[in-house]
Length: 378
Ligand code: AMP
Image (cartoon, rainbow, N blue to C red; front, side):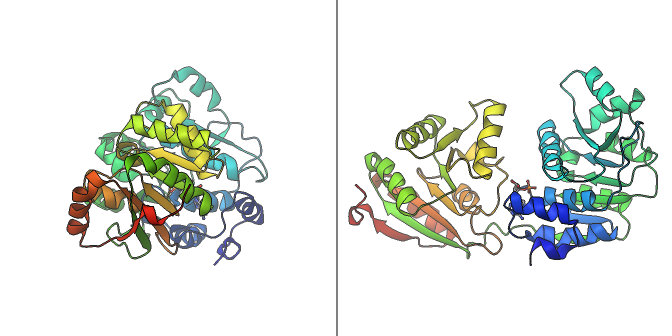
């Protein structure tokens, strides 16, 4: 299946090609036709599944925006838990809305920044991405109205509820016209999400694309016995000889992450490290460059990796072992999802042997081993 068969406007299909979206991800195959039909949708889909495009594309394809809207009525409201997500979603709209005519305005609003500029800019906005608290502040200041709202999206609904936004959301729902399309996205389905589903959705199309983290069938796993000093040369050899284009490398510490990425760069391989000591902007840029292919290697630690929203990663390399089997699965579970076959490589230094044995035992697997002295990587 390609994006041509999903019923989207041709201008969007063209941009998808330019953006290198070759074929729809499972969530997109299922959600796009349902949303285009006007159905309500309940989608259980984690970050990284392609969920954003699964609603951005049909929304852009089906809504008739007014030329140069001159009021404070929004057509589409997307409620999200964090300012980062709000900004990310706005960016996705901006990529795809370029050739939609007539043109219209998309805006992200969130707390933690001054409210006045947001109040002014809200004039003429058609698509609004918002965190709940700031949204209510702006509603109370009469800066936005919802009489013409056509579509409501709750993204990362489970996180919205976990962060205690339930009351704010109820207040927001009470302001919306009853005739509208509702799209509910959540990484997990729990009681709280089910409750919102009952309140909000009418006869929804239900979609579940939760990845099976323990299903390692699509992942080819390989381990190299290697001394700590030789890990750097082996990493470079694997990247260069395999012509690997998108590699996520895991280290155990932030210091090591920096060190590994510095060495790769010195050897002509584009790499950057992201970890807790880098500021938000630097992390965001690195991630963006990695996703769109400008950066070949991203080096990271377990902590930060949980926030990396990329699915279908072809290569993961454990430069240093994870602490637990759970972390191992979490790291390598990023490869080989859906139809793609992923590869996970683990470097095992002599002092890691015991720990790696435990990981394999707990996971009931035996990872194929290559002795690095059998590889000529110099
Ligand atoms: P999301 O789950 O919406 O955060 O998307 C995760 C990442 O996958 C984003 O970087 C998207 O740009 C990318 N992406 C989404 N759908 C596709 C697709 N069909 N083909 C290639 N990349 C995609």
